[in-house]
Image 1 (cartoon, rainbow, N blue to C red):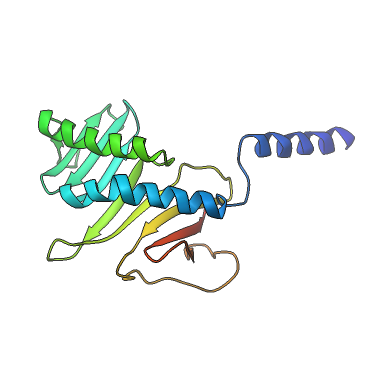
Image 2: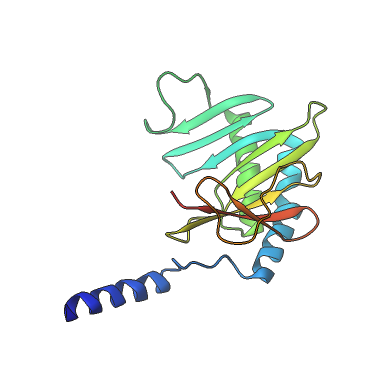
Length: 179
């Protein structure tokens, strides 16, 4: 029993050292990160009309935007039944612009989803932060028109019901149960 107790304590210490805690980023970090996303990434998303972006290194890169849906990577990147184009020099250039903007922002994210109005205005973008908790997933939601329905009840999120906390006028921190 004593060894089991030390084993559990050891796992908790390792989890804490690895950043696998139960707390979202500090409030100032959130404010700084969304300011950098808004300055560097959001303008590129809006200009290129990007609906989806994924950068998983050499295994899978994907972009869905005004020019079509494109994927580049190994066999795990997409399925044989899906229809998408391969990266060409133009798509690679657009993908690299987004990658550079995210790199400049220094926000730990490698994907996002966006929606646009029928008139082409950016409605919202969700940037999931890199996984840093065994219990929670945190994302930044850019919602300048406040069009996304939000559960603003206090307390922990329920399964399938994310919790929203306002960072500033246009940005929210979204907390969801890690599945």
